Image (cartoon, rainbow, N blue to C red):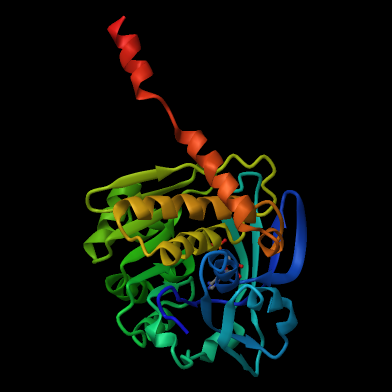
Length: 314
Ligand code: AMP
């Protein structure tokens, strides 16, 4: 199989309990890896490195296999599948974690099936930072590696988070987590601290306010699509990353302009994810719907410079 556009992801496959002001669901399909794969597989083949317990209904992820997601790296072991509970208030921008049961992740050591190590695009989805490194160190010279993380690991395994940051090309992180990590209220300063560790770009996710991509010499702002009925923000970040990396893998274009386009594709996928609970909206999302929304994104931010100049001349 051609290795050119293969994406490797390591992260959680989970059961989620989610409460939002609009409803609550229990033990639904979740986990950073599944959201990422559902998004990225719209563009390129995805390989999953993860673990579940024997309680996990594998038939529920068949729709992803049908879309080109390879689960040969998904271990099934004794113990319980990762289980996470979260709640969102009316301000859907901040997640309150109610519980995190690591289950089979407590003793997980990733193994890489044949060919996985040569994947050119590597995404270290949110999971213990030491596991992220265990996977990255087995990869042979990826074209691009991106990591995500969260407040839990910044608070409990900060050194591990820093070590992983030192090894990757890009970091995808929430606005509040940049502040927590860097100990500053300025997101720009915080992102610079991360860039100083080595990555060449930081993708700062700002929930309903969109996302910014900060590099040493570029600052790109993408709005979030104005979705009127945000139902459940879970997975927005991971599906953003999936759209972003999927687009990069599909085009192979790692220039600044290509990365800007990838940010818009990521934002477009995330805007669909939040319309329903769990992976329900991503399940049947098509490239055509996505491309149409990318067109709407363009209209959101377009303005005519000449009109302003003409007004000034009057
Ligand atoms: P997000 O895209 O940030 O909304 O991520 C949502 C997903 O992250 C949920 O489906 C959870 O199962 C998963 N998750 C939450 N906490 C953790 C954690 N500590 N490690 C790995 N995955 C997690």
